[in-house]
Amino acid sequence: MITDIVKVFFPAIISFIIGILLTPSISNYLYRNRMWKKKSGKIDSQGNATPIFNSLHKDREINTPRMGGIIIWLSATITILLIWGISQFLPSEISLKLDFLSRNQTWIPLTTLLIGALVGLIDDYLEIRGLGGHFAGGLSLKKRLAIVALIGLSCGAWFWSKLDIQSIGLPNGGEIYLGWLLIPIFSLIMLAVYSGGVIDGLDGLSGGIFASMFSAYAGIAFYQQQIDLAAFCLVVVGGILAFLWFNIPPARFYMTETGSMALTITLTVVAFMTDRLGGGYGLLVLPVIALPLVITTLSNIIQVTSKRFRNGKKVFLVAPLHHHFEAIGWPAYKVTMRYWIFSVVFSILGVILALTA
Image (cartoon, rainbow, N blue to C red; front, side, top):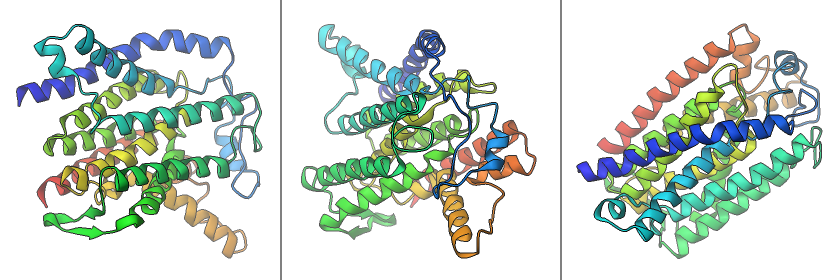
């Protein structure tokens, strides 16, 4: 038990330290090369202006670099490879026990983390340079959704064909048999989780929430004796905390797509891995643990639906919901801190449900 605890928590500390050490060089590069949007503001999904959002954020989106998510996935990846390399080239009882890069537990989430990071990095770069398929540059929403859907289908096919996962778990050992339908359902869930990535909109907001969610799944994986997966989740948390150290107001940089895409699609994979693969029902508690993302997505859906079917009338002053709270006068730090508290509470609730039923 003690060995497992060290194996899970020690890499997280290393990831945090590596992230802190990497940040000055990465930050200086981002500032030196002016890696930020050249024009503040955005448009909605119908191509209309968003004057309330733009007035709230007119001074935030320029002169502050994007691509801050690099800190998260780079520090996590370096930590994983560093520990693996030591175990391979300097094998000892300690180094071999600490190595958690395993084919059955960490290859898949690490792969999705890096694929999401790369696609997000491309989108961020195109947006910074004003290139790509929409108003401010970057990959269009349709292209990003298509890429996420394809990743989801690929992961679903791997779980179904290679890992022989045919169902999703229910409490008390129950299950819902899906067969090959697991593949499209995997993709749809990944799209749903990814859509909540727009919560990356205030200094420190998304970092604290993603740290809570990945910590919750680390606890679930540890309980299921998926120790390598638990270590992976916490090594990601270590990277997030290093990012968050520099992202609290005033933010040194923003996470943007290279971070949010990597984290959302990886969170989906981790949820499936703590489901039937781990003998639990990690997928069923995903809406609880990821409730801030669910609420964010629902607020967007409600707003768009209301404007379309109620002659342009809005439910919220601005969507997603966290920007509505800004618009009614809440300071950004108050929105962030309350979302953090909300996220921690429901992450704990999700772990309780996963471990007790």
